[in-house]
Length: 222
Image 1 (cartoon, one colour):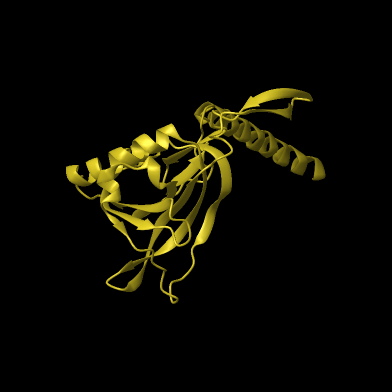
Image 2: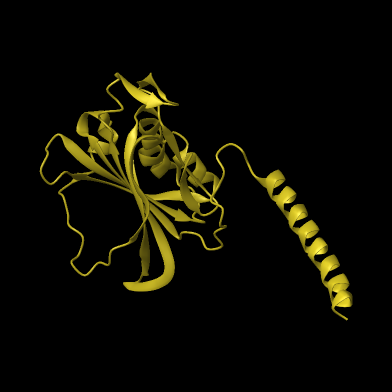
């Protein structure tokens, strides 16, 4: 009787093992070797994207500086967001706005405000909404200008998922907030010596260590 039980159990183990191997091979075939998106797919997407960029004033054209406003503070009742990308430097952002455009985000507003303590710096807020028809004037004013700036400099950045509000009320949607600042170290053009693969090698600070991309409903570093 016990021998009969073993005969029944043994084929099931073999069948399960064969199935797992097949799934494993399929997963390997689907895996993208370069710049893979997060392992867990994101079904929901961000309703809007806000890119806050702190830059030296002399990097911006007069068309943007004409919009300069006084610094403002967020309301004390505003809720904090959840950090989804820790602060990291040496980042390239040349393709970030192109990625967002491909995902049907369009620029809806551009705001330039004075820095609260440094008169030589300004903060540019670029607002993008999902599914909005592109506006050529806003694209020329903010999108194209900032796209050029993102390509010319290396950045330190962090990202948050923030509550989305409509008519003053919080909704179930979320907004992606990206905070960026020009990384002075990586834009210095210097070369430093670092340990890599068990030996000391020269590393250029004029090329990005990673690049910020947007895909599969979230921001990724590749």
